View 1 (cartoon, rainbow, N blue to C red):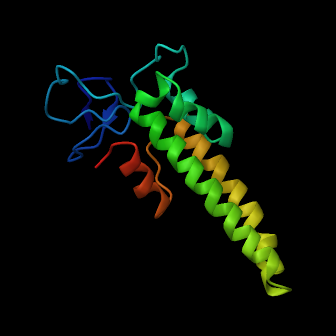
View 2 (spheres, rainbow, N blue to C red):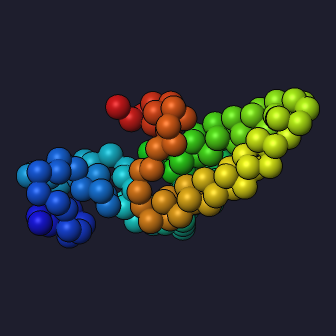
View 3 (tube, helix red, strand yellow):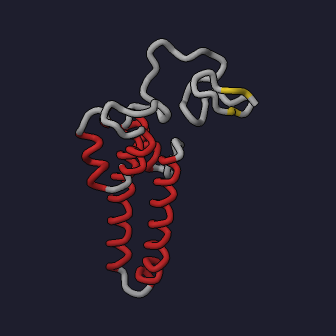
Amino acid sequence: MATCPKCGGQVADGVQFCSSCGQAMGSAPAAAPAPSAASGATSGGLESNVAAALGYIFIVAIIWLLVEPYNKDRFVRFHAFQSLAFGVSWFVITTVLAIIPVVGWLVLIMAVPAGFVLWFFCIYKAFNKEWFKIPFIGDWALQQAGGQ
């Protein structure tokens, strides 16, 4: 296992980027790195991972996208956009299921707890400084946050 030159975390051999801080492996830290998941405390006082985890509260995600320094931190922006997209998608899906008699209601009984589990899992991943992407939604959120 290799060691990240930026954060000192353990990285598996052959991996191009550190999973903790996003630093490219095999090179020294860049002179002016982009804000990353492990960029530490923002000038607002919250660590990036704490701000990203709090961003899974719908109204907080909107605030993070409007207020500096959080709207400048790519990691926080990614999780805020993913939170908003997930919240809207979940609302639409559960509303449609609630309208469909019997079959929709039965699926809704499973969809609501599954949505809460996914929501808590995303909070857990954000708090642990991971760029977990929900299928379909995560790619869009990364693009909105200024990713690849």
